Image (cartoon, rainbow, N blue to C red; front, side, top):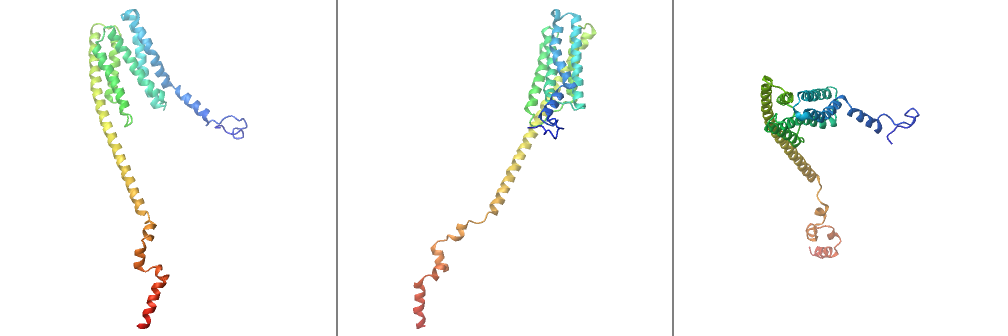
Length: 275
């Protein structure tokens, strides 16, 4: 029973707020915070963005403008949900899992749709998606040794990718179409450079983690060996080594057997008168 007695709860017999029911209510409330709601909105926007972008074959400027609006809202919520979670202590396990999924889902949807429409080369989409998937798997690879923090280059890469994809979603022509090509080129370069930097950080972090584990194991083994040596030195000698020495040793010392041996005393008595 986790509830308080009736006398402790004002005679009502209801569970105390600190019981399991109260804890469950607090956990449920923490899930529905503003940061998680923004993340859920971004997840819902992914299929809506795809439908808007592919309407009428994917080449209608009006529908693409609506798709750009959905993409822009998704990218803005990505900025605010993380900031709100860290500022107001709204970090939850759901947010830790759902936030990176939502980020990669909206970006992957945009890249794949643009490549399928022929607006973006598939090799660009492949480089970006392989980098994102590889870094995610690598984070899980080293997670027991530590967490790789987001770098300034990684944030610049996300900004460049979002700007470039947004410009490609819009039906731009003329100089703006040329500008979006260079923005995407910068995004690809940052994607590769920051990916290599993350790989280096992961390798260093794993090496340090393995070295620390080996040092801890060696320290434990040394402590166990020292404790065993102290325990062995403190043990008394076995009683059998002090008592059970055999009849020969007892005869040589002249032990209690001499007192109770009448023949030995009789021989001494016969010699006495002649001396």
